[in-house]
Figure 1 (tube, one colour):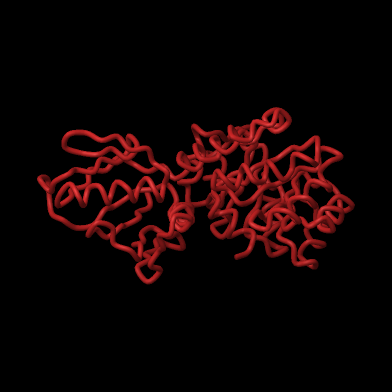
Figure 2: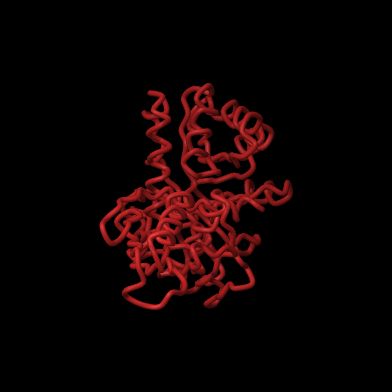
Length: 316
């Protein structure tokens, strides 16, 4: 799987600022525990190169790259340290050509049509949009996507746990970048459990599962379905007299008193982000059932049936 595919599956590319290279591996492990397996370590501090090298060596499950790369010297230093991708705040043709020649994924910052055209001319299909909140956010990105239907964006700046779902649901968004899930202060203070919790919250909000009432044949099948949601998605369970709530969004009825016994449909902001969440818990997609609208995946079943139900993922 290439870095761009990893970005999309993670939903979020954390922007990580490290003042001490000793914090690099604990931060990477905190992100992994929260379900995010990519991280962009910025070249804003002197610890960047050593931090990248530490994560690349000690955390094979983490795809580590370099961000805020503003010149070719930094780019070469990051690649030599083990960076698997390069992100720059602006468009620099020298950096892009070097990365292409070296086989390194590069995502340059492009906010103007002319910059996007230059990136496309060099063969790129994903560009950074920074700072997103200053340059018009989703409204601007929607307008830019019209003349560039083959381009997707990695917006960074002004994105948080409250609005991430709106971004991830947009078909022209590849993933988002942000530092709110691993702030410089939390890293320095060693608040790694908090970082893990913020990652989980951000991914849940990115996936945006909606409330569903699910009919079960009996109490036993409702228990099996409830356990599936807890295992696969880490949803908290609340047991009631006639149903079980798996988070506030999904209600599993203990008897089939409201409809036929069939499949469970789960709406999400992004199916590609939901699939790895399920795979971590041992549930896998049946790719033969995939349905697309234009080039976007909009529906997919899982291979396993749970409690007699087929599980159907639907794009919002």
